[in-house]
Picture 1 (cartoon, rainbow, N blue to C red):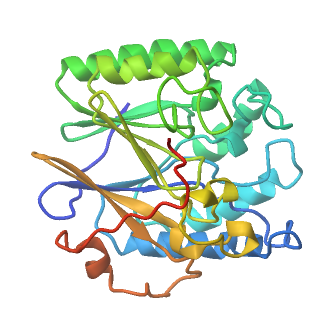
Picture 2: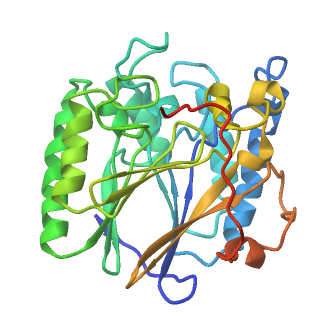
Length: 324
């Protein structure tokens, strides 16, 4: 566990959450998806945007690079990602994603599962896959969700460590926030396992930990779509991607999919700004609109984007009763 200095967005602690950058060589798979050529540039814009925000730190929720660990271009992509995040003026904490260390054990996709052999490269590039750090009265925990249900020795080590770590944090009355790549569930804790959630028994183990230690919020990625749920006292956020949208959830929208069957839908890309105060905390989504490069302006001023009027009318549309 480490302790970092505090920075504020006003009268409290502010941090930034980004996810699923999928940085890759710009000439990789551009015939199928032309937007693949923009991953480096879109994430350069994200770094430039973060540098304009007063924050204590940034957390990356994983899938830092796109090529899988077994692909020849994995290390090349790591080099490109280092070049991007080296420009960040804030401390950054990385969470491993399935493109970084291997998928959770599953039968849904024909890609290799998490493997011990993938960790030396990850640790050399990004640091430890599970750890915690403190900022003032807050305790932040990074977990490697790919390990759950894997049976690897590393899974047992993570489990013993985090159970002890959270016990110490909660007994010290610290406010706790947790970061993972996979969300535990999308709709409810009893849903069947699928590509976008955690399987049992790992799911229940994690959810029980959240309840036991009154975790304020869990932030996850992987889905590339902003989703919100709640488990007990814990708010559960799924962050948007900074690179591209997965078309799987396009039926949630009331309009037809955008370019690339919904994969290149720039207004759905962005980050979270999280402000923690004595009264609670607030998570503000900030769209990046798929902007590229450095020195590029948002369609609106940053002050306006970070200070929306809560008196604005709210409308809800439904294309299909997807959650019925």
